[in-house]
Amino acid sequence: MTLSRFPVTVVGSWPRPETLLKALRRRRRGEIAREEFARAADDAVRAAVAAQLAAGVDVVTDGEQRRDNFYSFVADKLDGVQLMTLAEMLEVVDDKEGFRRILDTLDVPAYSISNPTCVGKIARREPLAADELRFVRDLTDRPVKVALPGPYLLTRAMWVKEVTRNAYATKEQLAEDVVAVLRAEIAELSALGAEFVQLDEPVLTELVFTQGKTRTFMCAALSARNDPGEELEFAVGLVNRVAEASNGTRLGLHVCRGNWSTNEDTLLRGSYHPLAPWFARMRVDQLVLEYATPRAGDLVPVGDKELGLGVVNPRTPEVESVDTIVARARAALAVVPGDRLFLNPDCGFGTFASRPVATPEIAAAKLTAIARAAEVLRG
Image 1 (tube, one colour):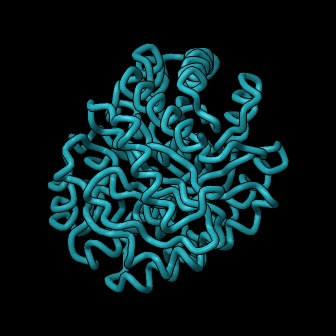
Image 2 (tube, helix red, strand yellow):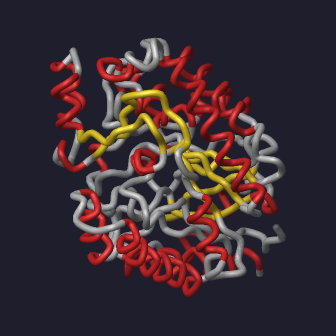
């Protein structure tokens, strides 16, 4: 795709309207048919795309409107996967005290986050996002980004040994089928002309910031080895095997420090520098990284990759000034040339459907500020 310098895009999610949240709840309870939910979601996607276009975004997404959150939605698409709230997971895990400590780090009720849990052999029953892409392509001629949960995140999240081991003896065996699912999905998205596919792997920061001790909500956190190096080696291998299916489609990797709360104190803190050697080995085109908060630390070199630079914090009501965004972008030119610098928020605006971190009005204002900053940089 041909883009202007300093393209403006979003990380993925957009706050859902109340009509869609109501339809989502009713669908979960089996009160409405799939077609009725689709109509509500279609309207929400149209509104999300229109808001991005009005703000001046160069690469749009569908706002993940059809998803409960950025990774749990796979339970609707895959055989062998069942949604479980974290409260339900507490009932089945052996290490209840350890899992309670994880829940204590949350700034949300344990029943409000659902985790896709592997309960049988997994297989792609239907595409994860191909239908989303088709719908958005009919709404705009601008390039479209499709966000997918990364293979390491999905494996970690779905592996809950107490219910998964009947289908897979080890996490590594589950990962083989996760990779197969994502390779098939990316190959299909590429064939449909997707301009940009983003793999979400936020849990990578948890490995280096907690050093195997304290766990965040990222999720089955139960399944990680104590050695972060071993886990990162595992993650690199999974991402690279999935990347082989991209067939020329721009492939991004999004890594953040958590986006479930507006209380910054509950979120992880630390520089990306410990991850830099692992980033360098991942065969992706772009690193989509958050840099709009002090928690992110200094800019990390990205080598020959593009940088999707987080220039606004999606979790604050204050809208960053154009001058602030321009200054952040110019600082990034020390680690990446201008023709490889994208501008985006740190994370999505509505990661969890029922717990968005911004309103549509604030999200639109922040995107408009980014687009105006891009105009200044281009001038």
